[in-house]
Length: 135
Length: 104
Image (cartoon, rainbow over all chains, first blue to last red; front, side, top):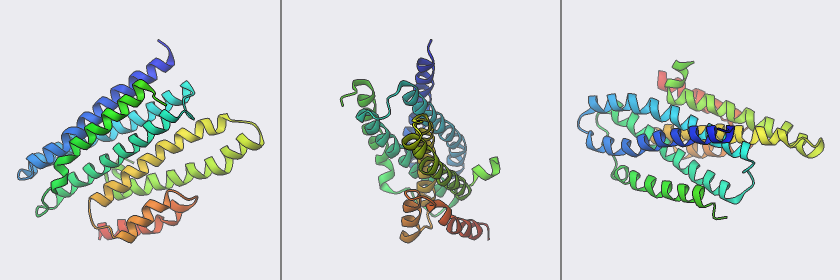
């Protein structure tokens, strides 16, 4: 197994954990909006998973692209742009979970329920770019 | 260190200072090494490192904004700070004030 394959394997594994947790978090936040202690436990678990997996996903992703000499190719920049948008959504979810668990009067905004759909669209686009390398 | 990382504003401050440092290293050392001394390896290493830290700063910034209590002006300052050299160092005072407010 080459170094490239090792880095790519670790990148994909971290991405699966990151996106899986991030996809689930808004759904749980909306469904458990009236059970704040359960939401607090979920936040503690998911926050740690999301934080570790985003660092690993980005770190191994950058290392994979750097060792393969992919930087400079348009598809890599397109994939990076989508990854930055996904990272921003990570921040939104993290902030909303904290607000829901620290402010009893705060209700989940309606758009929070739509975030998994946005994540799904972004992930499909990112995977397509990574697999097809269309440009 | 773990205590520092557990608070969103402290995470923002730490990633901001790291982002500013990596941007300075990239612009002031790696880019001249590449173009003036013929060492492209410098940008090949520092480019992805800065990209990683920039994204983590963005996550920390959006996390704080999404958590509430940020004015439009503060959001604009945080967003612009990471795009210009020394920006996050200049913005550090605002983050320190917000940390002091949160702890008061």
